Length: 143
Image (cartoon, rainbow, N blue to C red; front, side, top):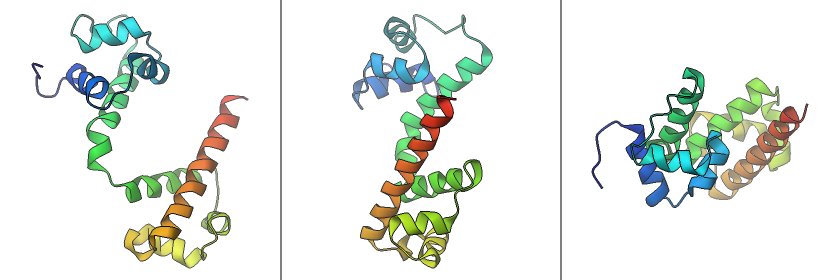
């Protein structure tokens, strides 16, 4: 595979080949059909028919699914989700702590230092955070 540094089409090809995300699946998250996904990955299409915002979204998704997955730790992802829950959905750390069956102080410390929580507590917190963001996001889409 001839990789050109920094070209999102090459990163998409890596996502499809190395991470085994199918063109159909990438199409679901990008809004592209499978044929267009493959044409873009193979440098046969530059998505000129899309708006600047749509292209930006697709390039962003490619970045997150390639380099973004390896550059950010699982704990940092959980913290980012908690920040989304706090900011966009106004869910307090107290509520998150209650659902995760940890002390609010422990959650506050986790937000400063991920290693302050045991693996078991981090896991419970992650599951709660992921479930809530999924639940709330689905309900916002259905409005």
